[in-house]
Length: 94
Image (tube, rainbow, N blue to C red; front, side, top):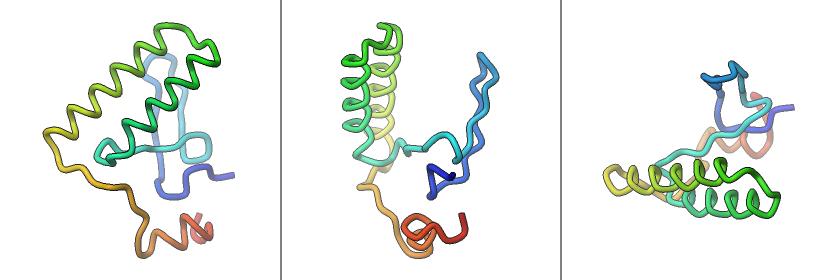
């Protein structure tokens, strides 16, 4: 089953070699203004789930990098438009 219908994802963890795609991951764009809040909610849930402190620290650093990116680059409200709609909403072409 496809998790992320908006993007085709090809990612690899450079440390353990695990590979990720739209079948088992999702992509958030640093330009999307909602991402810092989404990461904060994720961090807070990780704290509740008792993730290790290094993971929490890593998320905090990521939040700061995204905020810095948005200060120096165009950022915008996230959207799904045009031809993306049939793929993202209806799953056509997935």
